[in-house]
Length: 406
Image 1: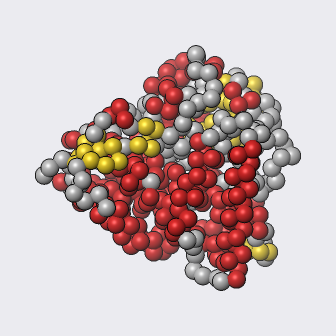
Image 2 (image 1 turned 135 degrees about the vertical axis):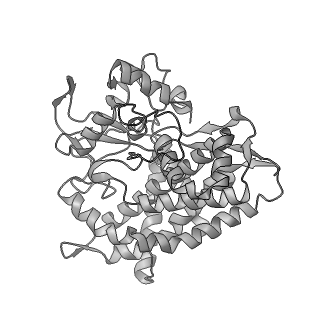
Image 3 (image 1 turned 45 degrees about the vertical axis):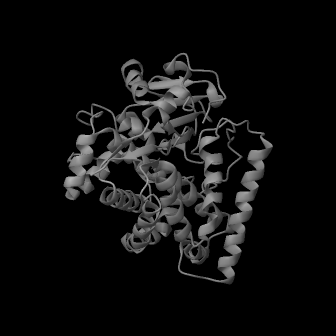
């Protein structure tokens, strides 16, 4: 993504998470800010704050009095206090505030339990093998475009009970919501695509009402909170949440892990030679290359460690920066496949910690297991050709690799 904003001159006073320097390599920026000012500010997007230490990120994540989750993606369209339905929000439970949040999240827990994740693993493994078989005999190909990006979208499509041929449509929606955040709020194409997304979801809801089956959409249609069925808006919003939160994020995590292994032959050969390392390796890849930065809106004016936050200000929650904080993680910039103490924040902190963390872990683990079984030795074809997504989910969007002969 190319930023539509002018280049950043000073990260402490004018940061922009869509700036090309941030998109390419945000880690030195966060380290600089930890040294200069652990809370940065920018007038962009109507006013945005950025804490970069683990302690401050955690404090905000647990503070539901001063920060609201009514909107979790920073964009040019900053909602006012009456623009979004509180405490439910547009995509519950991630956009819900207490006390409704606990009810909405609790209702979903059975759908994301171990049995549901285990039921999707055979499909995920067969899918990975199918994708890899399509690359057989080729010396070079793009691991992001031809492998990583297909896995989570097709898993989520199956989880929701949608037609597999609609997977490409989902990617367009995700790019709109997560990457095109610096598009002007009044952009007609953006508004039209949101309308198209709502219409698609409504059609799926109607089809599932007419033909119930064993999937998440039918689960939501039949679910209740406080003895009442969920509204259509609630069902649609949660479906959209799963689509957005479950696809781009896992695609990014798989791609980043492959990018690391392609660049570090010692780690690659160690993991290929010792598959028992996969458990801790997955957690370390999640820590070191956590893809997700969330956002909050300031609920009311207050002083935050000497900074005067105003109602309606944006605040970015960079969980990837928290995972690189040297006060919490020893040698945080070093990837250690056998790191034992690893309470990372890749899936968030506080009440909104990711419900789908088990599903994402399974997809990442299976994707790496199947890749390493097929291609234990590989490298980047051209490091300069790797591109990264911008916005609040960061991961490789092009990842050309060359398979090395055994």
